[in-house]
Amino acid sequence: MKDWLYLGEVLHRRVKPVVHAFRYRVFFLKFPLQRVAELSNAVFAVDRFNLLSFHHADHGDGTGDVLTWARELLVREGVSDADGEIWLQCFPRVLGYVFNPVSFFFCHRADGRLRAIVTQVNNTFGERHCYLLEAPPQAGGEAVIRNGQLLAVRKVFHVSPFCTVEGGYRFRFLEARTQSASAACRNVARIDYHDTVGDLILTSISGAARPFAATALLAAFVRYPMMTFGVVARIHWQALRLWLKHVPFHRKPVPPSRFVTR
Image (cartoon, rainbow, N blue to C red; front, side, top):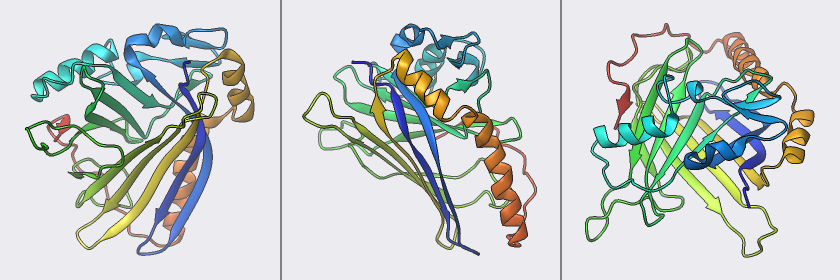
């Protein structure tokens, strides 16, 4: 079954210099890029307008086929054995609009094991950056990512004016599968950010899988008709709340010269 639709929530908790937390309900996609054509149905379109849609231009470098872009990126970065399926987790367009603060490309080997994860980050200034996540080689020299394994990377890309570009991220990706085919799979992506002193922001996006069918998609749209518009609205609302709490404000620095950070 194409259990590519996930219903869940985003959690965000800032721990200093003031505590600031929120959560909101979302739905998102996680699907194999080799089967992107199968997304099309009565309420969902690929590269054209519908209630919900996926557009290649919203991902990668914004210029062409996303699967081709991802494979070429991996080769350029020396990841030659991620030659299996690549799954993309992202928000879809809703009524033609989307903003993905973060999306994930899960890059597998031919044997199905997870080799690397490309985390693509967008900020509200129209800038985009990728973090390439890998696991240290195991015994025998194989570098595969285990379920729930801690992955870390240095922060180089500006996201929020209430954070400096320093410190780093810790990622954990967990997938819970059940023995019953009718029971939903659970998917969790955790992103914790720390500065030079310690933990600053703890976040996660999680959801339970549903069949990717027109009826389920329509139900998600009816339940959250303004979801992607709400993503940007909430970003600015939470920024206002932080400003009112007198959290220090930082000007946007020059973006990094390299598009990919290892």
